[in-house]
Image (spheres, rainbow, N blue to C red):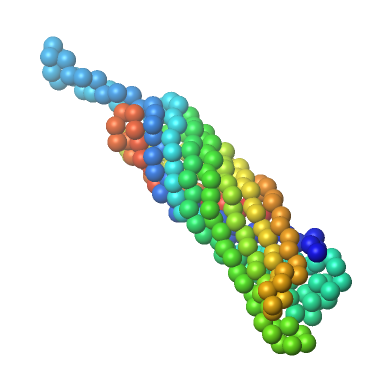
Length: 235
């Protein structure tokens, strides 16, 4: 029998202290102005200044990790409620998820002198997960019984403002804005003989914020690379 239960994912503070993200490849169309070609008639003419202004799209990949995440299970059927209340089954298990992310982003920059500001949206599919088996002794026999708690981030997206300072082809910037993600959580509890006594699963979309910083370098007039660190809180 499946006992549905009231339980939740608690992801306050270090939610996804994430994307240690070598978000590489902002690129396929970073609108930087072309340098003008030298004209034999004007051999001393300086090239046009590089510009970050314009529309861009690109891809990214990174690595995510999280802390202060926990799954809490209370149960609804009498035996499970009693087992959790007496400690025969765990009611709370901490999970520290980590894993890879990959996705795409789109944005627009404006430049005024050395200041660059703009807006960017991204969406990454993720395999940021953790599984913990909290083994507890059965009350009557003392035999080991499994209690498997799992948490996984399916996808993660943001809509953020960017503000930075440029040194020609190098851009240093800070960023902040809205973040959202979809979490999958599950609990399975089995008897010592392996027979499943309790199972439940929950999918939840959470909204919070993201803040971070990065550095971007224009390799060519149309392609740039960036490395970015973002801290997410989906609490």
